[in-house]
Image (cartoon, rainbow, N blue to C red):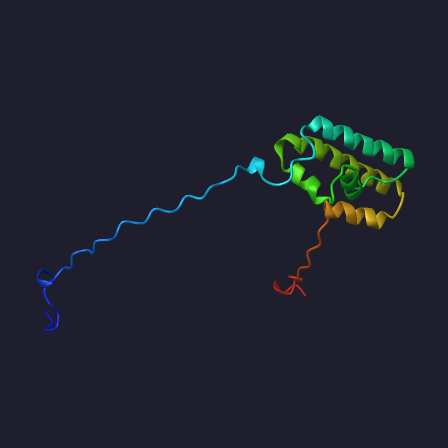
Length: 149
């Protein structure tokens, strides 16, 4: 045994320090989420669906294309992001998805028929997560690895 090391039985063990009891955290008064912020503009999906249908009827009468920002303004919102907020609410999700699908359907019909700026419609569809299904991967020629050149 080395001279500078003590045997394990002779090592003085320190008693653990006693900790002070933790101070109780102050309770913060929390306001329920339903009572904060601006009240919702639409209380039920049926009411929202009527307004959305009025928007589509107005666009059809004026022969205007459907757009999400125009629909948002027609519904009384200040931006299209409010529509996304309502889409995240389970009660309104179906109504919003149905309206967005109708807008998307008009884009696809116009693109297939060649109406309007097709490139702009393709851009719009890609920004709403459409994919053309084509991807090109550039790979090096491997024939030289096998000595076939």
